[in-house]
Length: 280
Length: 111
Image: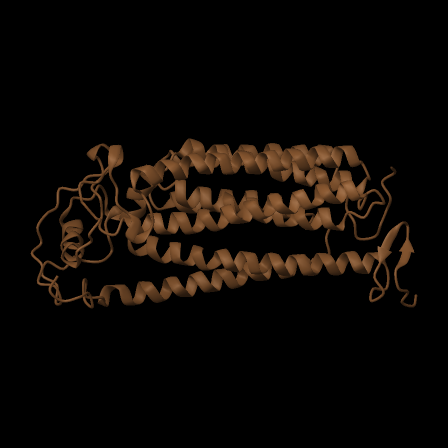
């Protein structure tokens, strides 16, 4: 078959640089899979940071996960799984030219995505009010307050909390930092005074650099949340396409591509839920 | 309205979609249940195994990889291979040099 500009096959528009509708579809799909690999590798950098920090400082993660609500995390996992099912159904509807089912499934998926972000908003705002934020913004207070005032973050406090963390009794061997404390560091000459810092209900002593957990938490869930927002945008674009009659002819490629993207957003959350919420 | 046989296209049945959904919900419940049992270092690996099982269900069925051209699966799995190398080598590296780190070294003097 020779190339024809804007050739019509079964109502599908085939661009002139493709042999036929199938080649056009498979090319789009391969491009989408390549994009998804870059997404995996984008999050991969953050998963790598997570692995390195957790291997060296398991106590930070054990401490930090006490501030996350396992039930809300599980709820969000279920919501995303439902949205994966509905968008997969949307692809089926587009393939079978069932426009009403397609619209319904897209609306359900958007509703799930909105619900996910709603739960995320509850979690974020709670952490915001408790001062459990990233890096230098980490300043716990309120009902979950650690005893330490981190706000001015004098470098002296850095060295001494580090020493204190080593001195603090850890619950078990794998909850202790793998790095030995320096009683009198070569740079600081700080006295290892034991800071009476305590975590939730005073059960878990706050380790040094607990902020690292919240930095990782906000980076990973934040990047994921941006992807959820992008997914909502893509699904609104599909709904607009339905209005324009793009899919009535059985041209489901766009729906399929958005669905592939959305499934990856779900896949990443499956791991985030496990690694951030379900520590020990 | 008929299920036309366009080459290279798989149309999932409602039964399959619902079946995978149920399996994923059970998987989530299993992950949470497993995290409540203290098995020490095994916990994280059991959790990762269940999560990977769920990911495989999504990829094979919802993402149609099972019926897709093998090259697409090859591309996607390639990403995980490189991710594995990336994280694996970074972990080996950090495990080797951590014992030699002098704590608090390099931080501003005078405390």
